[in-house]
Image 1 (tube, one colour):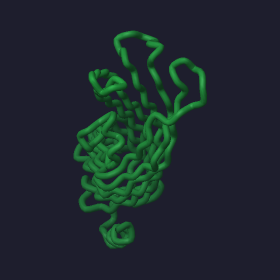
Image 2: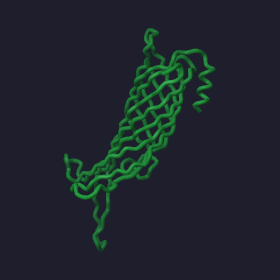
Image 3: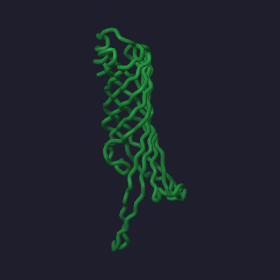
Image 4: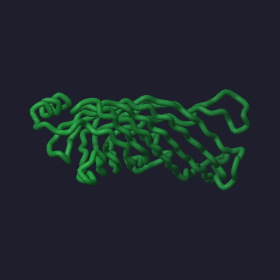
Length: 222
């Protein structure tokens, strides 16, 4: 697909060089791993962040972005007495907080001066933190458990930049972009010590992320 866009770019009419940019974004990433349902169970994880871009040549640039994700669930656990004569139910909050960093090349072509389709492949680093708390109303609850893990990943996407507004015909424009594709994040193990602080760290969660990937944003092109 990148080679097809490159050929189209070579044959297109002369146009302006690839823009530099800075945008505010909303996004979504699939959660294909059933283990992530402990924290989020609708199949797509919403994110918010920023994207910056640097034009390197007429049709080639590099983009980098940071997104934050936050979600959680109330989990109910059933336990029984030794003789199974009585069942008890306990609840706790399970939360996920993530910082997602991406960077990679962006190859575009000029359909019109204001409309530039593009393809991008980006490497990613995902820093996730999980929290489990049996009493979230209490700050510094001694029963809270938390763990952090880092995992690599990447996305491949097609998109477009639309920049219809360049006040006074200048170099600075106001535009909108949309890109969609597929993202994949390696499985990570989240390990934490017991609330008492004694004992070796134990795995409290293990999951990866991945599936349909979507980002859209508005910002300045210059």
